Image 1 (cartoon, rainbow, N blue to C red):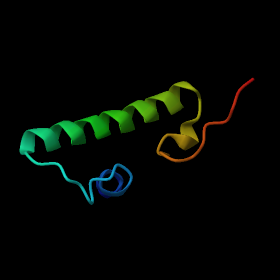
Image 2: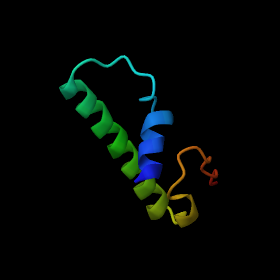
Image 3: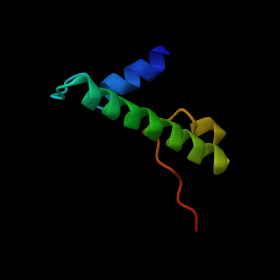
Image 4: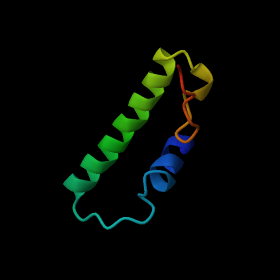
Length: 63
């Protein structure tokens, strides 16, 4: 849980935000969590289990 909270604060910019209102904040945090889950799912489906928790590690080019 600490890793998730840290990523929301730092990687997605919620540490220093200018969002006003609970509904807007809940929407933005929900979108950030959805992006994190989608990236993890994409890594798993592509067979890159070791990168499942990575937000910044580049995806190797195929071709």
